[in-house]
Image (cartoon, rainbow, N blue to C red; front, side, top):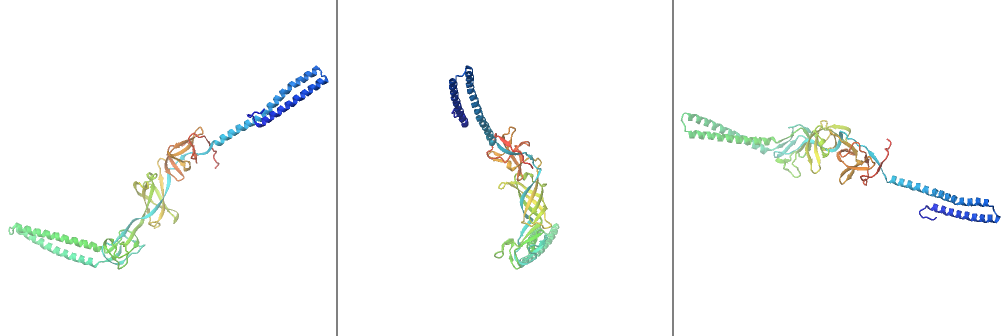
Length: 428
């Protein structure tokens, strides 16, 4: 018995059985010879023959027992190995159940504080700076004088213009009186119609000349008024770029080398503006009623009240964001223009959808995908649409049901139809 299909130990046992059988046959032959030599009786010979017939059956039973003892454990081991291989090939996964997305979530964006209004103040009249009244950091009111310019040439031009205006006024008054007299004489036919019309025309010419001189006086008077540089609105002076005796020119042209032409810079800080760029996905949720507050590093734990004032109502094609302006009451001067701040927008959704952790998403060529476990214990890939982004989790607006068992942290090799095994939930 040397069948290669049998287990090795079974073959060895079969060979041992054969050797035992041969030894038994030899013993029977030797016993038979002794019996014949001893002259055994027929009854004894019959019993001996019966024993000889039982020996092959006993040996056959022994061989079958040895065969069973050798094969059964091997078959059990092979079945156990098959089950273990199948268990190891089955993917263990953890699942999460979609939950309702929050109706209100906070969007945190960086913002730069800017003044509500600011202006660069230039000279409108050429001359020398006589003196300045305010320096940087000064709080000023609208119309308050910041500096005074000396322009004697302009003052002289104004005096000349006013003298010309007086002359024009006298000429007009005389022409008007003359025209009235000639109109009266025309009624009595004392003068010709042509002469009366000439006097009336001369009066109108004098009237026009008077109006011209009056306009020139007004122009020069306006320029003289610019000798006093005033604040356009309430605010704080943030720059002073001129000193006493410096030549300043109208229109901001530098009067000396190194001068920028800007005399003062003023900012309105009672109310501040903060501009933020809201991502396109969150832009529809930003309205004037949206709650908002600011935080700053220099005021830990403090929430600075603010309000959404207006937006561009247009998405910037380069950044895909919506520019939103937020107004902040800054009467206490807590914030300074140019400071960095964080803007907290309380975005509200009227129809919140489902919520999933970001770790459950698969990014495939055909779109964002999630893997769910069906009723047969197999993986099923679903294409979904993302709504609001909450950072570590997102809103799923389409493609997912509230009863789906979504695989968390799925592998990139996971495919539809793959058998999976749901791992037991960890306690806590």
